[in-house]
View: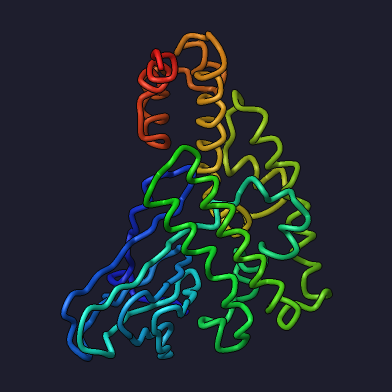
Length: 300
């Protein structure tokens, strides 16, 4: 279903290389029927964790009641809005993430079997999983742990957050995937994914090459439109975003592990203009490459 562009939210995701954001929502002294989440949609997935009070969330026109401990899963592109169903303080957590959060596991066959069907939109978990299978509630503690990690921001917290979210998705797939995805339905997607593997490996290793979506589409004998659609469905990123992330990640490694100059590193990843390299790096890493290197070499 397509929703109006006016209702599309351009959700803030602070870390472009780890596209996940936690929003801690509080509505003090809410009235019964008061709107606590405005009507919107976005291209990301969202997990809503009810923490205090009670609410009704309408997701793709279906109402779902939520009390503390309940978890709702909004599919990518799903239109959603929320209202208080109590008098008093209301609090809930929104975890917004893009499928690109797990892009580096695209080659893992177990990830491809259990988690990727959800990320590709071939299947949807129930919006309120516990209503279909109360057993899954025992895994919701992973979300509390992830939220605590995100709030504390200890070293490596994003890796822990990603691992905990991936673990939850795997547990949900264990509960619901066999009911939705018979083996024969997976085969066309597995075939398409295999076709993209060599290309993705090329992007992740040949950083200095000039990659274009048009050239890649021709090499795979696909129309540009179909290629771009399939590529984003598989990786969660547009082709150019994926190329940039691969280049910037390699640049970060070289900055931290080598003595190459900025110009040499820029050349290694195919950036002829050092100024453009600095701009690109800062766009994806949130810091200038020179500052990253300086902070890494500063006395502890």
